[in-house]
Length: 96
Image 1 (cartoon, rainbow, N blue to C red):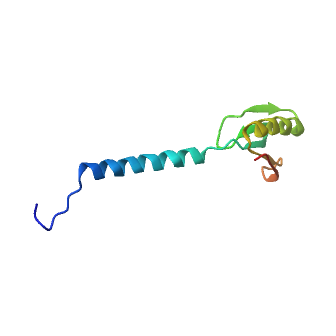
Image 2 (image 1 turned 135 degrees about the horizontal axis):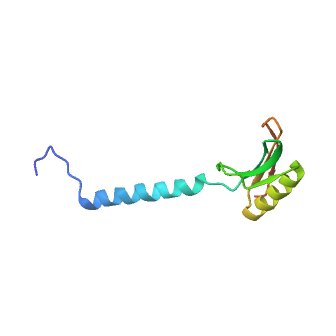
């Protein structure tokens, strides 16, 4: 090979691909949480897992939604984030 060119062996390329793969796998596991949000829903209350669009459960009263969210948060060692009727955060309970 001429002195001015650099060449990577197939082993170096394979090692680099493996590092990229494992690094991306670790990042995906960190991104998903089980935090439960108690949010206003129409004229009722709902429990929604953080990051989900789908509602886990609907309730007539906020206190029953909080009880459901607490049960789920204890099970998965997560947090309960309670929102006011205007959507702002009222309280946060941690079960880590």
